Image 1: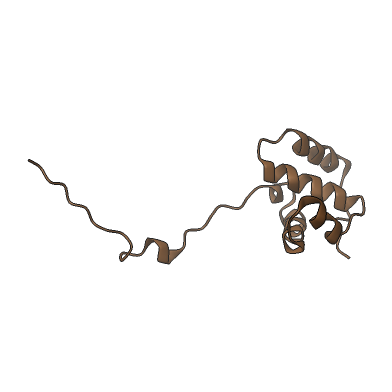
Image 2: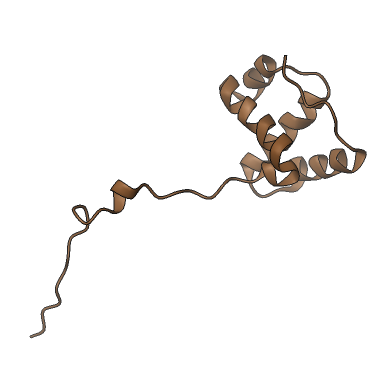
Length: 97
């Protein structure tokens, strides 16, 4: 099973603070999930609690382990190259009267 195993008391306090006060709903959810994982809740139980897939919970835990506190935040969105291709953008010309 997959759990968050090592966490400092300062990190616990920070996660509690984020889970209560962050304006970002996803950050609050991730902080709560990490705390519960640390308490021994497994990925299946966490996916039921937060109503997300097991893969999502695993991603949250991986982000915590690799990026630490920064793992609570969303990664920047990447633009799809095909979404901004020259074919999809139309050129507009200004007409003056």
